[in-house]
Image (cartoon, rainbow, N blue to C red):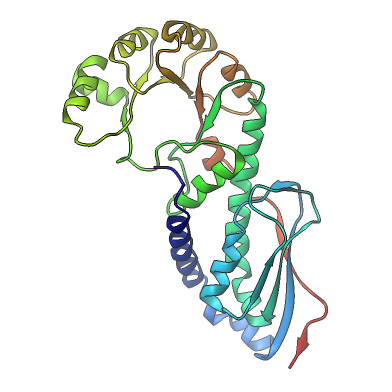
Length: 289
């Protein structure tokens, strides 16, 4: 399953925002209650402090729908846009207390999602001269998988399996327990009750040769050298799609792609993504009614 259902994403975002606001005790901001009159209204601008690939613009609407539906949200950028430092992503108008209470949750999610999308885009650009496609993994932030996966797609990657139930991925431990590649594949195919892709992970070229006889949907080449990857591509000769994984980073991905593999998967675009620098500025024309 990949991120195609916008309603599913919206439901997940609503739940994540609700839990994040509760975690932050957003309705009990004692500092604002002591310093900011309840009637005070203000404008807030959400500004990027660096060049980023924007992702998560729907977060603001979800935050303030839960916190204060009267806050007006004006989005000035779209997911996937590349914007420079100093550009305003969105403008918010409403009760000052509400803006301050929702600020941290809004920024945390927006910075995280844009960070993932920005890093993903750098990986995609690094292999743009080849036919290889970038895949994400399940190495996502616990509880934020749908948002992380959406962010990688925004950055230009393709979603790998979302969960353990939407792909048969036969890994080295499965092969060891079943007594070999062919035995594991045949057992999986016999027992499969619904149509799912079957992928076989191979550590050696000997396993690749055995897997090619099975003709799975894809063969995952795990931690192979560049020479082994090139030899695997020659062995497959286009009969089965090949995915390279392991040792993938920004300094190695171009050479991996140039071996001729069809896909490259890396967890780095989610587990090692750094939150981008986005700030929130209250406008000077705050006023009271």
